[in-house]
Length: 305
Image 1 (tube, one colour):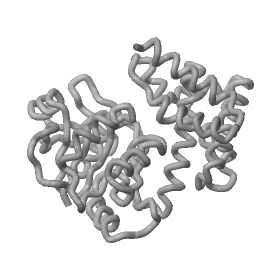
Image 2 (image 1 turned 90 degrees about the horizontal axis):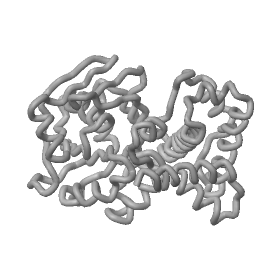
Image 3 (image 1 turned 120 degrees about the vertical axis):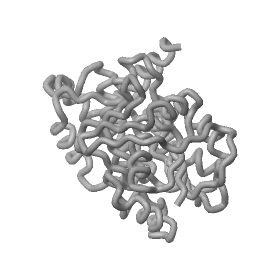
């Protein structure tokens, strides 16, 4: 199986690197600067699960290459349109596309561009970042990639992908219900990123402040109400389960969106909270905390320029 990983940052570099380490035929679609860096230093993974270092195969947009069996899309949502233009030439009739972006909005965009049948469900859980020299630093026990057919079918192609992923040094898991998993993660991510960016604080101090914890609960219930309005396949007692998960997070835990704001980087405001807010308006659902979260992010974007 030939795999094209779009991007060699913390997420794409880690999971693509683990597949390469196993012996899967992986090529990374990168910018010229990143390719030069990889050519000089190799792809380096520094991880609690074991380090790895090798020189990966790379291409830049526009270079000739045979079509790939699987495209693993690991960019940020605000780079999605550019990424689509970059990898489009490498899509053939047999190519499947597995996005690892947060949220749900991108599935409709990718389906419109390439056809519903080409787009698989995919998500990941990982704490990883790029070091000063472009190395991938992964420090937590969690390094999970979950995938599946959005139809729920155990198709021939998804089983082949699962076989290719099997044995790699990361938790690649074929889901029994990828749509439920996607919405469940969307709920967690939108709640955590929303509250930590709004409060400009890690989750611990927010939980300790009674009004802070109540605000988390209000935001969570608002988002659940919005998701249920579009028949999202959430599990039973999802609010209780997610609050238990939030209560179990480390005191200094920050969302990746909050870390991006602290670094004065772009954020995925429209892709995550904006999409939910649009649904709320359409369905005439009152979401005052979600509205405050979204306004906060849009103001940040405006000031960022």
